[in-house]
Image (cartoon, rainbow, N blue to C red; front, side, top):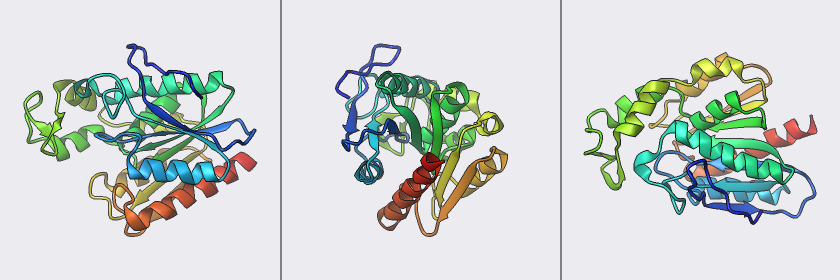
Length: 244
């Protein structure tokens, strides 16, 4: 893919396309978490591992993140759902069948996008955020919106736009029973950002076919020892699903 991808606001979405040279028309699209981008180790490692198995991969930065257009202060889950749909549109125009993998907040984006867009055929949640209001209160509740920052990082200002969206959504758990596509959830039991209970709860509400994999000792970003088992779990599951 060589075309420019823009969201509905006209902001350019930066992406990297991994072309394995395989005639298969399946593609994995990967979305990152809050304050992340397409070049974070988790995203790159997964993209390269899947591509090496012969599947096309597109990893992208949501608007306001990385080298994508837009302002970080405008970043919300709701806006990122629109970003993902723009990327899906570009992939579908090229004849691809889409599997989406979202990490952390990108996991919540995936649930809402899959709920409302049947062009997403398979869903993967990597340490996926479920209870958005609880996450906001836990991580940023002591900061004042439009004055404070996320995790004391000045480059990531905490906006009231973000807060209001997290509160309005509150939780994506209610959408689980409406998602009818194959769904894989992977979570580390040492995650101190998104509790593993989030994945367990939404998994219990999800429809078959579904699968949950808990990785012992893995943190929120599947650092170091968690990256390989996470990637292998994704590859194995995709293989099972595509073989049907």
